[in-house]
Length: 206
Image (cartoon, rainbow, N blue to C red):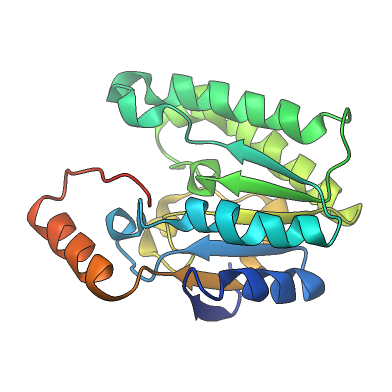
């Protein structure tokens, strides 16, 4: 898959960047600047979308819907991971299809979970069919004019994607421009140092 163009953003310019990207594309990807997904986790991507991007979209009269595919997964044991991920993806599909309220832009958080490890038996048993359905829904919604903000800690250029399964409809994702989000200054240096010294640590997004 050919990933989209890359630009770098911070909390201070992410809103106009996304506004511009969505004017010309059906989707935009927000990730970090590292090929190591651990260093892209909990750096404030989601918080920046909610505090900076969503208010700007609302000013334009656009309605958003948030779907968190990673809800609760940090606290799940490895053996049960794909069972809980299946639940999240099914709930996400229901939210994508819910017609009760009009939606212009879907915000898909922890979107890396839609790319499963092709040869993992638990993925194939519990998740694969549901992920395929998700991408089919996303593709249809995009053709209807709906737009997507994918938030992912796995960078689209990361080599780990070589071990993942792709469906035809994932072109919506891989043709989208990529925004590499990063903290700035002292907070960035402190976070990176702590991650390298304590790779198991999970910090709260802020």
